[in-house]
Image 1 (tube, one colour):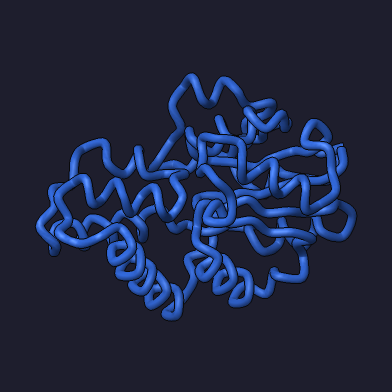
Image 2 (cartoon, rainbow, N blue to C red):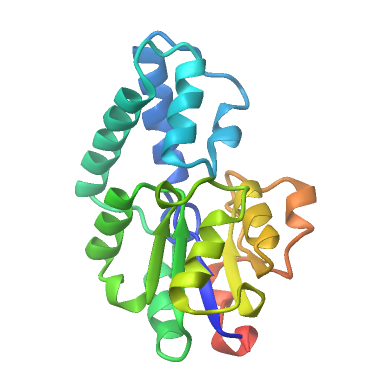
Length: 212
């Protein structure tokens, strides 16, 4: 194994409930209609993709305006405290002592940097990628392939840690061994979970021994 590449939202940060609350309120406040499957569809999309999708739901703003408004609100929430997943900091720091770590996230660069700085984890990652920086968001493999490139690693020699359906599909399409740590509130679809090399109940079960 050459490297381990983490997702951010739903793996290290319990941010999906915050994203859902912020985007749902934004849609309702700007003339749109939130659908029953909207949150599931949005998980893994890049900023441009989800902003365009919210516009299609009837939000009376351009995708660029939607993205700015939602990200501003998310940054304000994070300034009040980043909702880290249990054992996230301990797991990343423990693994970083012996494993090269990367990060491939659908969050915008601005929020990735806020989270890693606030949690004191920035120095643990040799490379980080936002899907804003690649052509396509998850489930396309672009983010994970770019993370491997920046790490100087073969994707086939990398392990990815994911929680969502689109994230699992993305890492698998990149050729990585995928470890699923499903979020209890937003479990992945069975067909996506079937792509996982291992399924773990929590980050605490992610050890150097397992990766080796």
